[in-house]
Image 1: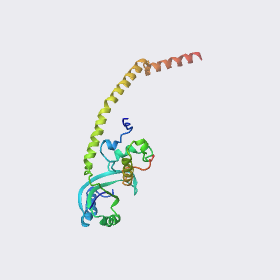
Image 2: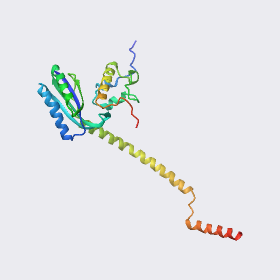
Image 3: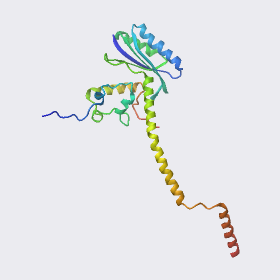
Image 4: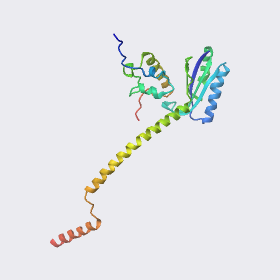
Amino acid sequence: MPPRPKKFICTFCKNTQSPNYKDPKTLAQFITYYRSIQSRFYTGVCLKHQKKLATEIKKARIMGLLPSVRYEK
Amino acid sequence: MQKYEIMAIVKNSLDEITAKKVCQTQILDKIKKLGGNISFEDFWGERGFAYKINKQTWGYYFLAQFELDGANLSEMKQELNLEKELVRFLISKVEKNAATPRKYSEIKAEYEAQEKKKQVENTPKEEKKSTRREKLTTIKEKESSPSPKKDDVDKKLDDIISQSSEGI
């Protein structure tokens, strides 16, 4: 039998780029409306990159590049 | 020798020139003193925070990569914690095969160019909408009867008053 085709293709594997805390614009795609980290079920990122993604988002939060809570004005 | 990366935020009460000096004297000179060598440095400039830090809304960002012994790193962290001009700093490990980071000014210029492109693409659509609205308004104006002039209204009023006064 031929191998089953994969449903999701990880965006970081596709671009040969690992998540980095210095570009918050790409990281902002992987957080929810209330600014919490989105799970792998919804992002479609592979396990290796999802683990790195979570740490990089946390780093960006410490340096004030990304919010951790949604503020309403 | 492990490769590290430091990102620091300088207070916004200082000038940009003095903020650069603070980065030079308090961070880079300290690394050299402890026997490290700097491979990359970049002053980002003004940047807003995602949330308020020490009641401030923006600060000067600074990024540098350097090589240092692990034993000396804790000493460096202790000294950096005592500096009053630094709001925050973050030291992280860099992988051996990682490429050198791009300059912030390049990334900023690229992003602004992309936004300009988007604006150019969006403008003709708005014009089309405006033309449609104009058409609708012109049609409505034609359909609606012309508003009565002031003199006509006065004449009519005079007539009504005279008629009513005759009746009495």
